[in-house]
Length: 264
Image (cartoon, rainbow, N blue to C red; front, top):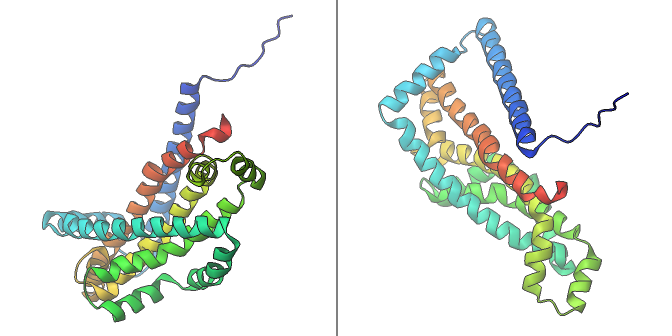
């Protein structure tokens, strides 16, 4: 009697299998969304159909509004998010490694977490008026507390014995941060970016809605004020698609790369 011992699939086959499952999941999600949307069209009174929404989006692209406003919003978003990531990472590591810094920032950051993005959008509009600074600061303030709390939590989880051993052997503080702390917080950094992107993107939309004359949020309000729901839905669709694409194309691969050592 011959016994066949199962062997592990080669890496390329595992990769293809994972990619296939991801494609199936994305397809199923899209079909579910389209089905629910079509049901809403049939049941609702003024809900535009997917075809009407896409046609409006195509017309927006034809007159140059789509790419122009999208580029403006992305510039604002990237600037605010990068600032939030840099400042949040510094404060988070300080809170995780220093009890004094933790006491100084923990309550303040908890309060910032409780403030919704719409409040930041309204406050920055009153502070800075209509201009590029309003959405950038809103993105920064909306994403910052999520970065801080995730980085601080991951830094605290770094084995203290490992850090103490490195210090006892005279390892410089910069090397400890680079070779011990940074790999340990890599996965949580991606999680922090995910939460920050969701909150900051909402903040950007609201800031442009209330305090801007350009961008995705402003164009959404333009069609809302014009009582044209197909135009409003078209820009909401752009808003959602950008989040989904960023998560699938950018954040997913980065997370797998940052946490590859866990499955090594």
